[in-house]
Length: 199
Image 1 (cartoon, one colour):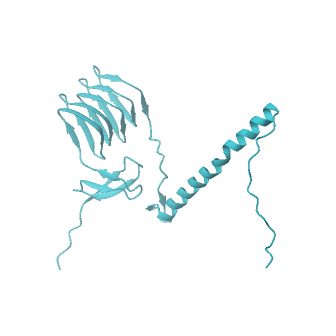
Image 2 (spheres, one colour; image 1 turned 45 degrees about the horizontal axis):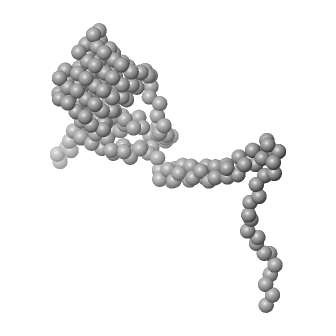
Image 3 (cartoon, helix red, strand yellow; image 1 turned 180 degrees about the vertical axis):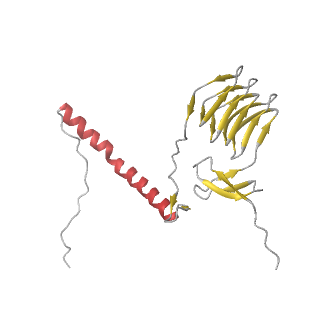
């Protein structure tokens, strides 16, 4: 019996939630098993003018010397040898070469700016702050995807918080009336009869 060839795999971090996903070596895109968003896995090498809404990839983005990008960039690593006008959120490192020009805010664990490079903007160096819930793990330490029940309960708690905030204007009116010494506003209340109907 011939042996089945095992497909080579690699680990890819999601640029949206930061969770690690195991993917096939030749995969070009997947859906994150934690946040369920589509992830592009290929690298981008930009050699001309690109004015887009944004580049979002789990691969690397390289802006070559003749390249010019006007877009928001989300990537694993970012190399700027040309011109980049836009904010960048990177999981790995950002390198600005001596011929590079970067205008925008950068959020990355590591930033390298060579002598002669131009960087205009703010930078936050350190681990990324994610708003997503951290993936749970089982007793053996294996990470588990969030279940629809957990997602539904989080939506329910948000809805209850919204409903609880619905009486806020009434509380504000009472507070204002107490401070000014005026009588609180009278609200119409529907009367409900508790008397039984006679047959």
